[in-house]
Image 1 (spheres, rainbow, N blue to C red):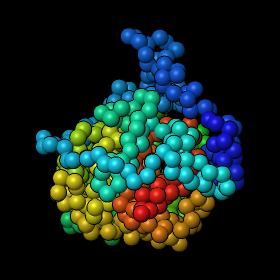
Image 2: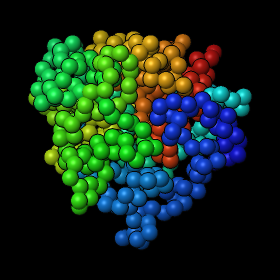
Image 3: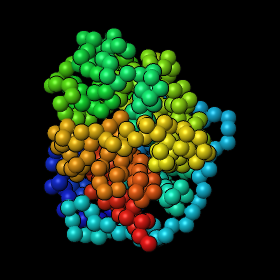
Image 4: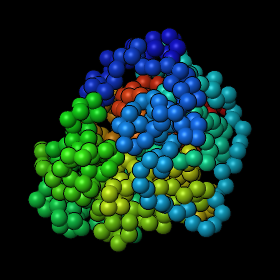
Length: 442
């Protein structure tokens, strides 16, 4: 990483002050050089077979640690079991190329909390981007891939997955197949003695559930790791005696605090919602996503989910897609639910509900220093900025950024060495906003 970018980042460290954003963000000097840690530079999984020091396997925990993640995030299916999300038998919807009114990489912005000026190209390299695509007025005006990612290769979406799950819940609610006001136990009686025993589906959808669960990736004792081991995302080990599936883990969760009082971002809420969706629809999550979204938007590639030992998909972070299909999804939402193939793929009422956002006062209680004025609705992050932008966000830098006023969608896959988005946000958020403003200039 250049000294210029390190200096710009240094000034924002004091902003990363609360919750998972602070404890997981190292000083900028500690961040490794993006070029020196690229897949090409380090040669992961090259050769037939690869040499032992370049081999990445699931049973070796180092495979899930940077810089190996720069390969493994684009090769999940080769290392763990998965469930396919069928794209359907029809033609892919159009994703036409266009000409940008501005030079994309030259668009400048100021990182949060600084007086420095960087350009979009510096943001891309400085945040360990694997692939990025910008759409403006329905056309692709910028698309680039780096390292192990290519246009036809799926990449793990991490918690962007949650926004798909939240959208599916809103779709089922619109169809009358799911009642957001109903108690969770209407669909999952097995959770009656857990934190979710007196929670509503809406509280789960908006993450205002009081549940004892830590999402702190910097704490090796946080429950996020117990969840990951139960779901088969981490090796369980020969002597492991804990829960061995998502379902077994979810029934162990206890209440902490009051429901409906404050936003609290916890991945287990997405897993509970995914369970609710299966019960309400009678379908697996992969089947439901294929039927309600993937086939309707005209995806060009199948997607897939990571699954646990009994084949249950991870609704909290296990979806893998190609970047171009992530753009199709974002563009469909930008157009009020209408895909570029002309189909009303997602009900407009669902899109309107997402865009309205949740309660900023409840969100503020979570203390996200870099997201002041934001809210959370249907598992989407809503900025309430002048452009009405909203996002799907995943650790290590995965994102869908939809700017309705600028008629712009940005999708990005990445392998940042720091999990929490507090490491990306000082660069990506102002860069995305600046791009929207630049594309609107006469």
